[in-house]
Image (cartoon, rainbow, N blue to C red):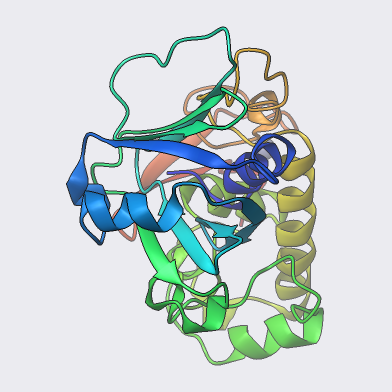
Length: 272
Ligand SMILES: [Zn+2]
């Protein structure tokens, strides 16, 4: 599932290519991905200009000039692609938009994911975004703020980092990477982390997410045919999906085990 760096990369691309454009037609092949009928969806967005592209946790919010917004959640396998004028839409998207420029925006594999039409552009009022924890890259997410959040927690650290009510937008890849960066084993009890480990974890979360965004995350699906940004962080992964490969720091083979129902990847020597 895409996490903050992947969604932020999509948001950046949408801002470059979609912002300011007018939607001239809509095709819905999977009405279940919507929260309204195809007719209501079309009449709310056709002939509307895209004003801003936002992100909250793992969701993208496309706001339109008429006040409506589209909330997109890709869940496990969804993705979005933009096709230039001379390109045809490939395969069958769940939902596609034709833009006044002649470009096409296609949302694929919204099987578990969705594209919801909501009134307004205020994130706080959107039910899709309710109950989410703080954004780890926001200004309010200071070291003191994080230490205070952690102080109340007792369970294993890796599932906690992935808990969207604790912290928004981190999933399996970046929980593994931030724990390697801070030299903490994924199954460690949060209550037993030292003060130094807690501080390291904070800086690792901020640093890794920031670097991953800069390098385009690890998403496999390119946004356009000439997209050279998406997926650029993949060669920089230290432990995620590297089972049996040598640790870049100590050479020990990376191991994996189930922690909180998900695969944890870690170096048995570097992480304690
Ligand atoms: Zn190591």
